[in-house]
Image 1: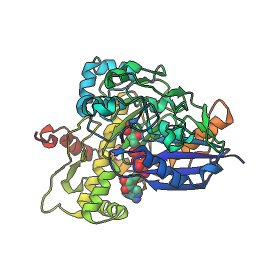
Image 2: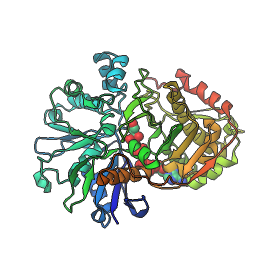
Image 3: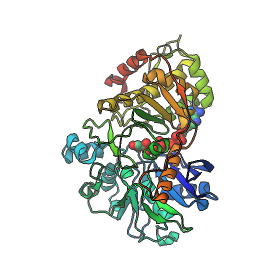
Image 4: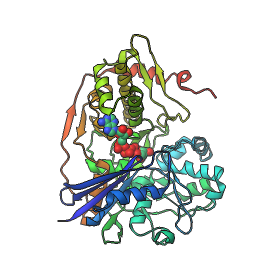
Length: 473
Ligand SMILES: Nc1ncnc2c1ncn2[C@@H]1O[C@H](COP(=O)(O)OP(=O)(O)O)[C@@H](O)[C@H]1O
Ligand SMILES: O=C(CO)[C@@H](O)[C@H](O)COP(=O)(O)O
């Protein structure tokens, strides 16, 4: 019996699953936390992976890594990390994003060339930030990798000699994760090296873009390494998204995405035109404020996640007139890097823990309902939503989601879908076959509810009221 391991190196933690290659049955799994923040030294990911993967990875015949997208891992000519990676949720490069859009021909041109109009999440904007703010680091950058590329390279023995690695090992990436850099064309599958050069100020080495089922190297114990991918592409492969399905993930980020046969190029920038991990495409809207909005609301109310859910379900739809705009740490979709959260409609009568909890759940879901609408504007017609991510464990989120989305919601059985997608890619690479192995779709719990468009209307009025969310400068 062949075993494959899948890794999800996400913002808050790393998860490792060991599964049977033939049918995807999980044999063992483990996780370890990552440090909090919007920058992280890649060595911390390696240490967490080493802790969680102990006793699992070495049992695998093949390993695949999926990881948080966009993070900028800078290496010098000896393969050493130049500075901590700037992550997708780091908003420092918002001014550089706006400048690059203008400098490289405007939003239409960016969408046509790269599939996306870059916000501060995209790697290219972080390159420009580095050039402008840390020239002493910028000048040392020889190679730029994404989090999953770097971890795959380390698993293949790559790394600086000081860490026992081989700096000359050739790194690889896949078209899914490459499409979040801002210097790659998802439609053609080629790097756009001039974009990276112009952003940073000098030419850099980029990883080879591997085919979806390629073996890109081997671990020291002989396991095959698949190309790996970004976490959202991993989840799409792990869940086996079908035509008509829109996946909504509520983790550190909120995402809504679908698998399509044709590339997308949205000049409004609301939809990122990513590639997927199978040779198709993954148009996606990503928000910065998702599960953490629920975390901080629970903390304010002095309850745990289950307590927040209980409170929210005791309140009526519309939270007694309280509405929360959840752009707590600036927002990416829509592009409002300087926004903060806004709570509107508090009265002495409605200011209860129940209504505050409900307002937080409705806020996160309304921002993701907007994301689903942006997908519709790109020609996607969702028939149901597959709800995943850490906050999909919340009963309130599950029960309120169909009312806010106006769509049936299916919650696949609790599992690490990003890590399972990485494992499925590894099993595919191991098989040498033309398509991913047929693993049975996970059973899903169905949730339906009467739509509450009035909740979205009140939310939409606050979202569109710039005077309310603009922070005075
Ligand atoms: N029962 C729950 N109710 C609400 N939120 C939850 C629950 N369980 C976990 N979460 C939240 O899920 C988030 C982590 O989700 P996850 O998808 O693992 O994140 P990421 O992949 O971005 O690191 C945390 O913010 C955590 O508080
Ligand atoms: O930036 C994006 C997608 O474009 C995020 O979805 C990241 O990929 C991080 O995801 P999580 O840590 O929330 O899983």
